[in-house]
Image (cartoon, rainbow, N blue to C red; front, side, top):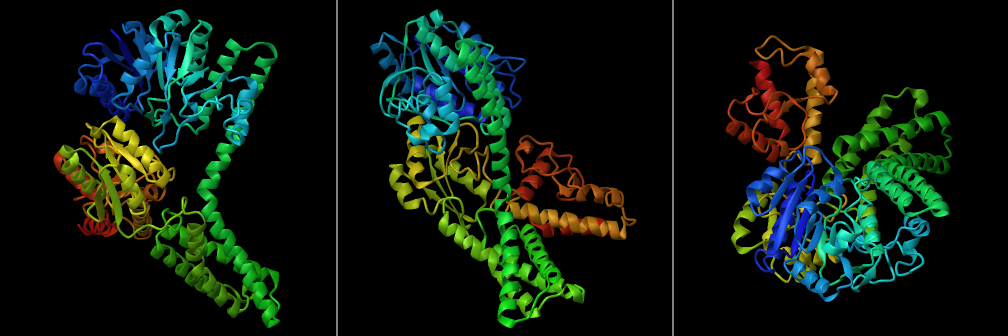
Length: 631
């Protein structure tokens, strides 16, 4: 047996499917019967193991009743494998068709090589610097954690952690390889030993790389066989939990490989890293979530102060502080209320909605001002000027943000546009799936090769580009890399699953599926309108009571309080059909879509749920509730 490919998987069925499809294609370039593939399933709950057994009969599946971690999973498969070469491969990778052929040729041409790594590109087309690394000494780790390495990414001194003195496209000996793709000589592995199972996840590849070197072998970074590594689909790379697991792995590594002053320095670095990441994660989360609302409220308050002072200076009328502060508070309050109610903080921005929020804020200011007692009022002229300013503020602010930071902020187009690249036999089915998932109100552009020329022309028009995995791993990699300089959001569709995997845009994030309809419930404004109706109907029930009709029990005040608390919604999905878990997130319903009652037929439940998810309208909720109320 020439090669044993080992994939350890945990709850990533879609990505595992992509990985295995590309692996089997790459195996086809090697002599028949010379490659074996193992999947070690770490007690996944998403049906991964059954999926592999059903759709990939040539793959040997090893099932675990508990999550043993990356090291133990690989070791279990390595002990059963027979190949002269062993490849540890992450499930969130895609290998081009000629990858194994090229790496095997390089390995056999260099008898001193014990392990090989390759260039990896993430789902946005960025080259991943962890494709090659150096020993994480205290100094190297400090440069990495502090960001010093970014000042001189090619420096041996400042960027030893990522082996910066070796270029991305340069083949060379390195100290540390990534466990996402680690091609190892069986003889070197036998001498160095298997992965250290003290490492549950992370750090085991660093430890093994060092032990292979200590056994007298050389680790190579081979630049001639790049792959896709979507990176971190089984974990949340930015989360504090990940940081703790990663630094615990570094603690184990430092205790094993360093002593004395170096070990003490590494412990300090680990503690510093955990605490620094905890602070930055907290601040980044709050800033991302609240920056735009705070900007709106702060500007409203500042403009209120400026308007009052401007009017005082030009008119000679003095405005006492108490009435002035009341107007400042009203300005911030009406801006926050109208912005929340109309969703002006959703991105991309919607011009009409933003304008409506501004006008609503101005009108609410006038109305609220008229209800104030006389001693809290300022000049009507100042109030009128401020109302006009507030009406224009949201639209003006967003126009400035779009102009200054177009990569982060944009206007939503009136009609969405999607491009797709697919094999001839899958073009029709892919187009039908896109239209059913996104709705008919869009442009679907059939892109062709070379993909680079498509992106140069179409990237401003495409919100999303879908690449059919059946075109092959090489085309998938080319498409992702070609989209990178143009900011195109490229997602990959597995051959056996209708999922859109990967993603270049951080604001949208990787998704396991497309949106449920152009006007579907995944749209924040649709979910917001549903929530508005829930609140209004709950308040009405609390005011007038449940009535005496056939559905009076459903319209109880207790249910109204539950809906107000977001624990329930008045109209919800039926569920109980295969695939219902992929519906948009929705609280349990007091009543069910359609007739209000739970459907006994899974087929009927699916039809009603999908229609509701694809084409939501609050009017339908209102009609159903009124019908049930009068029954």
